[in-house]
Image (cartoon, rainbow, N blue to C red; front, side):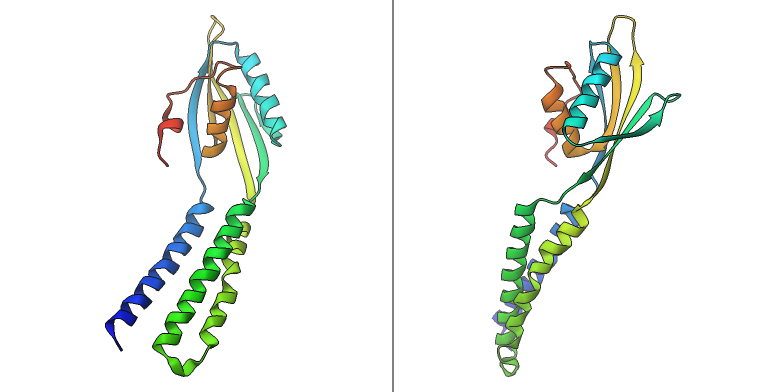
Length: 184
């Protein structure tokens, strides 16, 4: 067996492994905790946060008055364009693997090309793993007499970034900026 065929097979298998790791990363839990400050009174900030969350489809699921915690929950849907892209990449990758196997074992005929039919499974796996219940927790850390407040938010990283971008102006929310500067 020529070495170029073996190297082509190895590269194709590495692409398949990369797709598996991408699927795992795309549906990974990215819960993060961030503290935000506002010069506004705590009640005003909490009401603004609650309204914003309800507009985005979050439902309040209780809390703890002693710990000053509010809990919200929402169903997070998978991205349809990403599921389609992963299905397409899976189909192309499985078809390439079929072609490589056909080159390595010509006696198999064209049967290895049927591996391309497994490609849409990548999109289905992503959709199933990405569709889940997400939680968001708001905890009042401090409220000083000058009207300012500090709130700790625990939620999915993307939701915290959207919250920081959307409410930085109206509620004068400010954090340490780590969410917006992080490359991941």
